[in-house]
Image 1: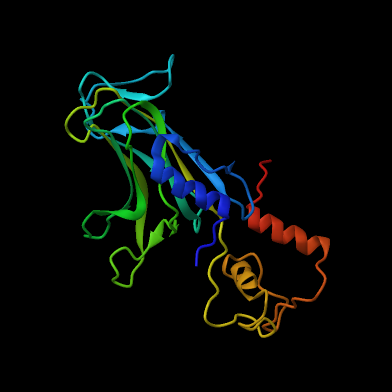
Image 2: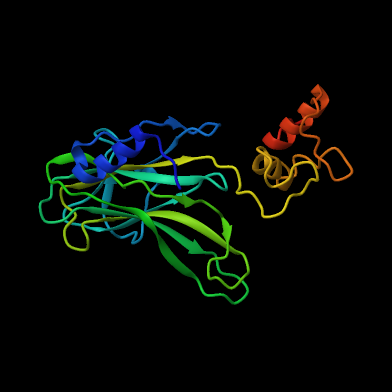
Length: 258
């Protein structure tokens, strides 16, 4: 079961319930470790689906993306996260002073077709947000959900891995009237997660019931370690500074030019 700190979970649910009057969850900008992370995607990163739709980025005012006049349409931005990241919440920052319509946001996954495949897209359940106010600036957030970000996955269930890409899709005006609406940006909340433990052990001395089994297997699967020889990992053996250098260099991909 997905575990979320009570403070974060409570705020996500609250934000979804009361829209602009909510306070979005607190999380650090992207960093390392298992803690909650936040990726901000600003208005400048969103591109119009139809380039002819007139809009402006009010860089001297609020910095929001505003359709001009009653123009309305769809804007999209790519979402990029580390492989295996768990997305658990999304917040939409918007300006909505239009009582008849608003903004809608969906998280989409698209297959990058190759070898005669057909292109296809689907929205991620849980990654849906809409504005529900008409008094100006506000933020609306999803309830907590869980989606593991993978850029390669079996999209169509045929047993073969497909290449996929994620995008955030914002509809402004819902095809009717985009006046008095604006997109400020989107915050995606996520955390790093070790890969799930496999069914079988890779090392004789770290069986499936070992307390460090999942973490040892993650190191092995990523190519950071091959163990200590003879099919063992030697989990209780001290690590030398030289071995530590190998672990860290491989894990972080350290590379320095000449």
